[in-house]
Image (cartoon, rainbow, N blue to C red; front, side, top):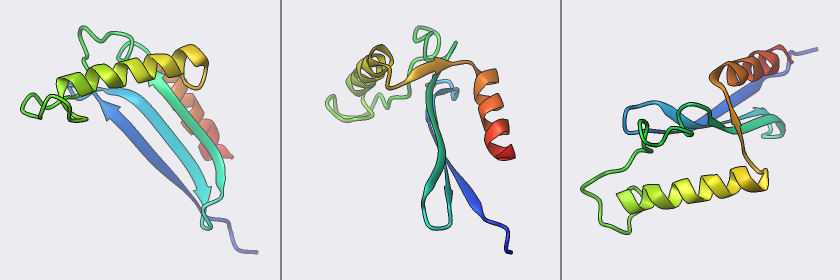
Length: 105
């Protein structure tokens, strides 16, 4: 019997200083069936927007997604998701534990 192949797709949103504030991962098989997934805001980075502001392009038009106003809208949306429970805040150690467990499965 052939060993199943799985793929991990990772998406992040970074801060102005290159740290990860939003981490998401999906593990799927060759047919695209999702086996496991994780989407969290990184504690100490997302929760410290004064020292780690989300990435934005200061030369972007004011209403563009990657403008300063766009970063403010993204913060608001993320905060909504945390408040309604569709996202949670997790430490880097917790994310690493999830990745290790998922790898083992």
